[in-house]
Length: 467
Ligand SMILES: Cc1cc2nc3c(=O)[nH]c(=O)nc-3n(C[C@H](O)[C@H](O)[C@H](O)COP(=O)(O)OP(=O)(O)OC[C@H]3O[C@@H](n4cnc5c(N)ncnc54)[C@H](O)[C@@H]3O)c2cc1C
Image (cartoon, rainbow, N blue to C red; front, side, top):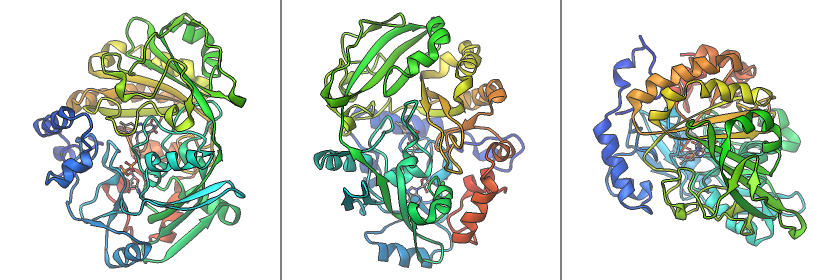
């Protein structure tokens, strides 16, 4: 049973199933919060219902098969009429849900090959960034960017165009140089950028619709060191006047605001130390003051969960994410939404949301604003569009959030907002179709690998495949 569906549309035949079982939600969240280190995976193994990380989606089946080899994946996929591959279950909507059968590749989490000549690493698809990054770093290599947390699977993150921040940094899927997957017939498909560039651009942000990804090849670069600084209380007027200068001040910039008091609560600057050179962090940054201690993006929460700040030099994988592996990322007890709008309209779009601050603030834990470079991946929200993302970490109150999302989406409508594929939104499918010019090509490509929709689910049918 699904206790929260992400797309409550009036008149839909699913409307009655789209309310949140709040009691179940809160029970799960408070259980997770009692142990800061408790992984939801452990809770689930302990006999609880199969749920997503946040606990707002109870998946529609508990049938889960774990494959440990490509051969097992092929044999299993061949036998199923419908299934979904589960990553680390960090999506907030039902994109990963199945009524029929789940396949987990959690056991397939090894590095297959590190090739210094082509500057690539190939990993099994069950691996998380948290597992890969220390290995890469030890061997002298790095990835170009990371999301706010390292806990997520590489295949799941790339499938939903997960991103970090940085004017020149594409989302995490832009690092993909090759994929291996098992198609609906149980056959192995190998896609290599050098040979299959067009197909790969369609398949990388595959939304789980192309097949079961078994291996991912990522572009790497020599390891680098970073420093992270946090500034507090950036006046909104400074943001309006100097957005470009603020965003280009560091390799990766995140702005956290609760939309109150006309200010950005925290500015996180992640600086690359080129040739070991330190960044000379001013005590003031566009009117914001350099923090004197480590901070959580939600200032009331303990900073022990967060990566080191205060300019302490550290390796790329311990500074690019906001949250540390082994600790609860973010708040835990939350919902998330995020919208991508054109980078050049960043200030107007931010001000549009700011106009809603009185409606937004009571339900919000924190907003994060980031920028991402344009890419060529068909279903990426940054397809041919450098973007600014306006993200909302919500209090876990779906009835209120579900009413607010259409209001925000209306306000952002002039900017053609593209929602994060793994977070909550109510933008109608028809609007998504006009926003993604490559959507018809994506549908055609996925039909090549999966003619009968073995890897599709209600989310994909409603939002991508047209019913
Ligand atoms: C606390 C928190 C912080 C977050 N921070 C960020 C952030 O900074 N930036 C950002 O962009 N997003 C962020 N997210 C969202 C998150 O990155 C995405 O939801 C991402 O998809 C999670 O990966 P997963 O493996 O958990 O995916 P899942 O939810 O398990 O699956 C997502 C999709 O990928 C597919 N999939 C997974 N593995 C495979 C495979 N092997 N083969 C084929 N399909 C597969 C699934 O079928 C599904 O369609 C955050 C989420 C949380 C909970």
